[in-house]
Amino acid sequence: MGRMFGTDGVRGIANSELTAELAFQLGKAGAVVLTKGTHKPKILVAKDTRISGDLLESAMIAGILSVGAEAVSLGVVPTPAVAYLVRKYGADAGVMISASHNPVEFNGIKFFDGEGFKLSDALEDEIQKLIEDGFVGVPVPTGANIGHMSRNLRATQDYVDFAVSTLQGDLKGMKIALDCANGASYRAAVEAFERLGAEVLVIHNDPNGININEKCGSTHPEDLMAYVVKNSCDLGLAFDGDSDRCLAVDEKGNLVNGDFIILMAGLYLKEQGKLKDDTIVVTVMSNLGLMLAAKDLGINVAITAVGDRYVLENILENNYTIGGEQSGHVIFKDFNTTGDGVVTAIQLAGIVKAKGKTLSELASIMKELPQVLVNVKVPNELKNIHNTDEEIKAAIAEVEAKLQGRGRVLIRPSGTEPLVRIMLEGENQEEINADAHRIADLIRSRM
View 1 (cartoon, rainbow, N blue to C red):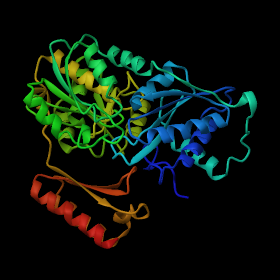
View 2 (cartoon, rainbow, N blue to C red):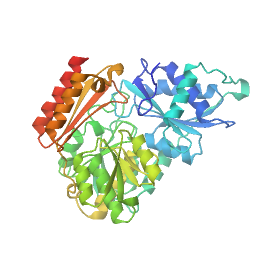
View 3 (cartoon, rainbow, N blue to C red):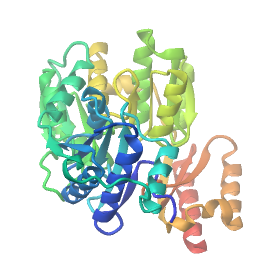
């Protein structure tokens, strides 16, 4: 068996690749590995709005109970709520059932430890090994020692209380549009912004189990971009299916991605003397324009591999204040242990109000270099073909030479989907488009 865990938990097509049987095994193994030495451990279980959530939640909880642990169902809440509530409720671990920004047919399972952090590779491997070994040596409790399930009906409210508390002041006088992606933020985000006094307009917040991320949210912000302009909003904020991401739309309808949000928030924190070592943390996918703008602003940039877990590792290792990804995962270390879309949205809106400028004015501190991203579907066993095939390697080297240091080529396998992502940056949009598609076509032909 290959590695079960990707860059953000275990993912696959629900009821086909990610089956109820596998969810049961993950619940059972996770409960054993994450709660060693605890007499009656407590594990939180939450989900997003996709239809397969009930199926996987039931199986997951059954696995947890089968080894004598307690399961607390939180219902539908954002992923960052689990990370926060594990700490607030004194739980031993947490589980989020979600495939984040992926289409409805996918689902996923990600674990948090008792401190609200995603698991290390070593712990994930330990969970997988326990499953592969058939749970040898794991006791099978009976009678009163079997686990018990309960439901916490305050989870959303407790998370909203926390999110609201991260802002000093309020958002009164602001007109803000929210796109909840028909996902896990559909209640929490709306309640939080209403509590802060904003005039809130909402789209895509009517989940029916199958419309999560469907032409909406942070992966499809076109509706929000038009809606903000039509309704003369100060800004718009778009979440993904599990609300660990947030992208923004300025008052003119322009998309403001995670690079801009991180840089604007970093500068605001620097001005307040709260940006540790004047440093922000981003991944290799961040636009070169961010690097150039940060230098002009006196902000240092630490660069990690793709994935918010690697951003967080760097933040924790160096005690940095903020970091994130272009896709909208933003981690404010002083508030939460993972990317938190609702908190990011609140912080950004608070900056706009505090600075007394429009979002488009604030975002003008950075100019993006032209960038193109092309996805190529590949079988999992061929995800590294760009590193092994000599013809593909030669084509990549040729493009890099042509850019002459004024751009870059970045090719990486997706950690959550059967894809290779080809990203090019350069000064000429037409040229990098052509080069990216030439590399993509070559990969397809060489497969």
